[in-house]
Every structure is written in C-alpha cells, then in structure tokens.
Image (tube, rainbow, N blue to C red):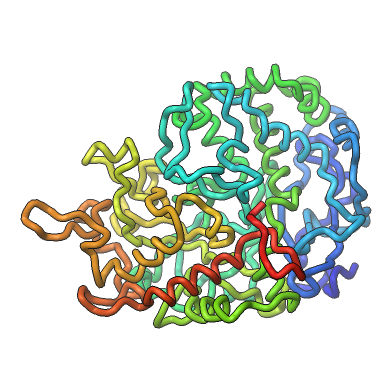
Length: 512
C-alpha cells in the first residue's frame, strides 16, 4: 500500500503485525483506525505508532462496538482502512483534506466525553479540559504559574501545567548511553502491549550537549510530565484524577463511582462489557485507555499547521526578522536552542520537528515565590529527584533536571518553565543569556551582599547546572550571547511555531 509516496512495506515505517479494519482491545471490538490523506504536507507527514493490539485472552463473547453507538449526530466523512494495514498506523497532514475529516472511533469519543467532564473531580467543576484548554493548544487558558484545584479550586499545583499537544512521539523514560540515541532520521518504536500506548520516538539531533558529556553513559530521556514519570498517555491521565491539588478524587473507588454514574456509563458497558464496573481495575483502565485514544486520534492534538510547518513544506516564506531569529536559534555560539529543541525534520522528510530532544537538563530557573510550596525554605522541586517521583531521589547527578519541553506554541503560553516563573519568551530568553553574565538580575542577594545563584537548588546539586553549552558558557561581566534586538528576532521566530497558521494569509492565528 502506498501513502503519500511511501510504501507501508518500506523498512522506515514497517510495523510488527497487522490488524483488520475491526480489531480488538481486551476482547472488545473497536472501530477501525483512520488513514488521513496528505494534502498540505507533501513530504512531511507523521506516522504515529500507537496501540490497539488484541488482548483478547478471555473466553467471553466480545460485545460489538459500533462507532455509531456513541457517535456525534453529524459524522464526518472518513476514509476506509484496507484489511492489511500495519498495526495502529495513523497518517497526519498539516490539516485533513476536505472531505476527509477524522471521525473518532467509539472509544475515542468516549475519551472525549471523559476529557470534558468536570463531574469527575472532587469539586465537580474541574475537567481535564479546564487546565488543558483546546483553545489554548491544550495548555492552561491563563497566565497563572500553576493551576488551582482541590475541593474548592484554591489549592496550587506544584508545577506549571504542560500542553498535551505533540506528545505522540514521546519515547518511554529511559536512562542510557547518549550515543545510543538514534540519528535524526531514525525512529525507535516502543513495543505495544494491552492498553498501553507506546509511541514512536523522534530521534535526537546529532548536535552535542556538552553539559551531559560527564554523564554520557547515563543520560535520562523521555517519559511524560516534567519529570518523565509517566510512560503512557493513560498513566499520565491517572495522576491528576487522584492528586489532591488537582481533581482531588480521594481514591480510585471514588473516581470509579463517578464514572459509574456518568451519563456515558453505558458507553463503557457497550465497549468493554456489561460487567465492566464489576472489576474496578478494569473499568478505570478502560476509561484511561479511552482518554489516550482520544488524544491519539483527534487531529487537534497534533495539527502540525504552524507557519514553520508550512515553511518547511515550501508553502510559506519567513519574514526577514523571522529568518534572523531562526539563524540565531540554530547558531551554536548564539542561541544554541536547536541543540535541545530540534528544529529539523528527519532527512527523509517523514517526521516533522518535535522541537525537543526529550532529554533532561538543569537550567536553574529562579525560585518562584508565587508558589505556596516555596514558602517552606526546605522545599525544593528537584525534577527527576522528586517530589513527584521518588525512584531517583538518591541519584544526586539527576537532581534539578527537568525534561526539555517542545517549543511548539510556547509563544502562546502565559507561564513558562517548570515552575511558571516566566510569563513570556522575551524574559525567558533574557534569563538564558544573562544567567551567568548578570546573575544579580535574576537571583536574590544574601545578607552579606553576595548573589545566591541557582536559588531554587540546594547547594549540593548546583554542580548539575549546565554551564558548558552556549549561551550559559559566559562569565559574569561578559557580554551575553544575544543582545536585545537579537532576542526580539528570536521571539518573532518562535511565534512561527504557533499552530493555526492560515496559508496565504501571511499571518498566524492564535493557537487553537
């Protein structure tokens, strides 16, 4: 089969196994996957390896899952899937072609209902979509450093809420040799089992990261959240449901009871069996699985329709200022951003840039004194070392490291960095280039007048901070790597990464 000029049998995109149009998950028949024809992306398209293998290891008859059983009233046209499509292959363009809008499977439609349901929270007012707003690139709709949750929506979270866009390539969390990260045109497909969504990993750039050379044999990479603690979309979704600072369900049983009484409870029964609620673990697993399916199937989670995407496809031109910003972004002696925020597609043109290498860095952002948790002088957010994961808290070399986020839609964010301490890209870029040259601008002074550099890290972990890579390789009093005009050029370029660009209109709309 040929898609967009590439054969599904080519080694670059071959997947293990095949599925028929009607395949199964935990014994339940699921609607077929959708192949979306390419229109705007003639060469840059994304093949997403997702799950949906059969775990039909049960003797009971599987209930038939009709997509129409929970489908919207007006279903869009969808392309048929041939019988021998390799397992779980989706093809996305910058936007679906006319007449080929994506119809979500019944499971994904269930996930959409769960995503927008505030009754699943302890307050009854907080849905997944409250913090991951579709109108704000699935990021928060405000400029709060962290979002508010809990029973009365007055408890602060511990970290800035990341966007849910462009997670489909995130590899599972691993620590291993830096040299083992594949070249930029290779894809490492994680194994798929059961309800887990293990997705393809866009490879790391070949540009070196000097700060990691000392620990080259043990480079942390991948996973979801700022600390990589979740490996699948399902496991990521479970955390907020039970977090007392977020959706505040007191237990899994409490969440299950809400699902049992939700208006879409019958959808769960139709899709996963009439007795699905008799097994609490199964019911919750299937609900989380549906959330993952929604995020994988709905193109709004990965539209790839920024001006930069059109530029790469040869359908838009960057302005002079945008071009200058891109050059600074890539220059290893200036912004050096592309060393971690990969801006190139794979060499075969199949994979758009993710604008992240998925690796972890210690960049020593200033302590955010807006956060209630930081009123305790003994409290530190150490990323990989906790407090939200505990399996690496004894690994001192990883303390203070956070995962490199994508820069897509970063110009539309109201809070940046893991602690939300920056409110716009211009301030963040000034911090990057002035952190070492003018630390007194960013860090407080002690009583003796000395500057408390890296004030959001305990002294024993400050050696983990990157002081080798540009623009952090300067000394106090030296000129920063970028001047004010260059920073403005960089910000203008970064705005080309906002989704929603209207081709031919000459400008990008606000991120959707």
